[in-house]
Image (cartoon, rainbow, N blue to C red; front, side, top):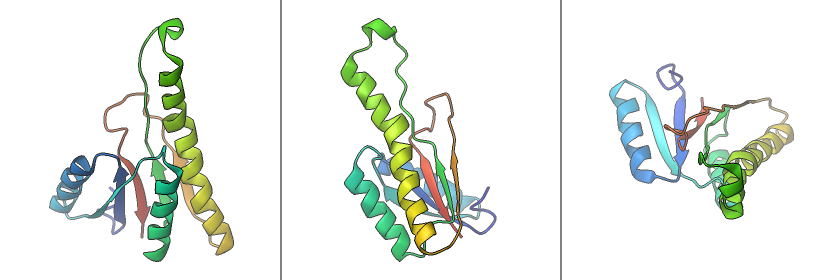
Length: 132
């Protein structure tokens, strides 16, 4: 929807092939999308992505939809799996929102950040960073 309205959608997720497919679908609908492979659990990767976006003119709207949810009995759910979920579901959004927020504050330019909890896995690995 935003891509059709003239925004460039920066598609960010771990699965580059899925991102390329989504970018082609957006282009087929008349939108513009760029692919930025990104793992929100990797602080260095998030920092590189923010640097790339800054060099390209910044990020006006951030839509984070990365999520990981394994439906298992709490007592049987391994601690390592719980840590992995926290890395994606909590620390991923923290990393993604703090870095652009600092840039917006530094440039005295307000941006919008929205956290979307899909509640379902679906396309949840396809967080989108949008710039106008």
